[in-house]
Length: 183
Image (cartoon, rainbow, N blue to C red; front, top):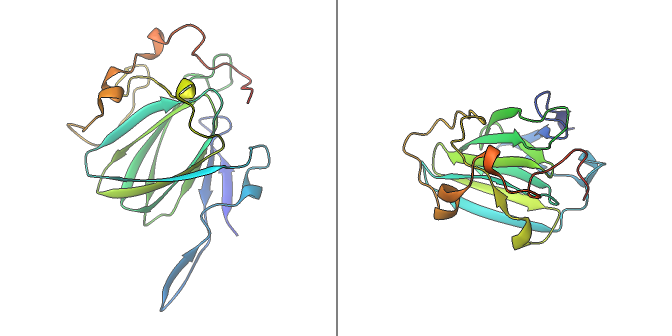
């Protein structure tokens, strides 16, 4: 049975430590179950990204979409930052390591900025509870001092989009999440 626990740092973010079953043939791991997140919506799309060591993705956030992340291969330093104005953990930052060794997963609710740095070459799989919507693809600067994230990597490789994300204090009016989030 998996151990699922809500983060003490960010309300509504859940960390999953799955059960690992193995024998001489290898491993079997149940990486996601809908019933683990009874207050979440159904995941409708699954994605995979391969990233090279030093790549940094984020920080991204959505007003209407939740994500579930799992790293089957490699090592990702994951950073979550709560942008939900008026919420109990507004402004909190959580750092955790998802690896092909620890098999942790993380559920990220709408309004929580999220990103990861590839500490090694890695693969990340993620499910979302909404189809791609360009209007709901938002970002905040990965190196914002208010976020104060320890990404572990030096000289990160960033997309043009992630280099251009505004600081938290410069998020446009109407694009800042609020508490409670509505889906």
